[in-house]
Image (cartoon, rainbow, N blue to C red):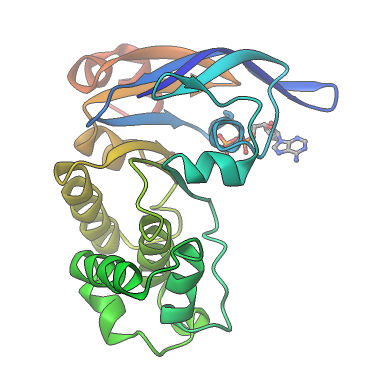
Length: 234
Ligand code: ATP
């Protein structure tokens, strides 16, 4: 569904991604793990058209997207939940969700999408009239995901959803991500939290200093010396 081939990305003269190739088959949950600064956020920003690659190709469902603009890419069915969530804190939960569905003109369709978002996130339904800035960290992350779902993406890019959350909330979030995937959403999850990512993903890539240094089925990646030493501490 998503093919990233030999991607090179730089900020000015400083190159941060080197020949990165990643493949996300339809229906799968694929993860990219790596430490702070490995280039995970840069990768997702390039896929969603915010950054332009120096070279390399990105295709979504067989179409090249590496020279498209972000709104065109979202319109094709590729959603992005950015790191830091980028909610509108002074707006209510409902208003934030409306922003995610701004392209939906028909009221019935909007209602259908809202109901679906509330099915996955019942807590948000209870808090619909509350300002987003007053939600807990976990609820804000759920709102950020729900807002992206309002555009009905077929592929969702998730940038470190576990950041700053308590372990019990991370477990709950992992369940939700798995549930979304079981309902047909393809997911590319980037995470520093290797425990979370490797527990729920089928395939994994490990990035270090802008390079993919390991990849394969999650069970195999979990067995690799590099991952055991550097990420799992065993
Ligand atoms: P984190 O978990 O901290 O977000 P990451 O794996 O997502 O890390 P990136 O944020 O993609 O990593 O950063 C990759 C490299 O690019 C780092 O060395 C970082 O300092 C650098 N970098 C990120 N954003 C910029 C920018 N706007 N200008 C210059 N360099 C940047």
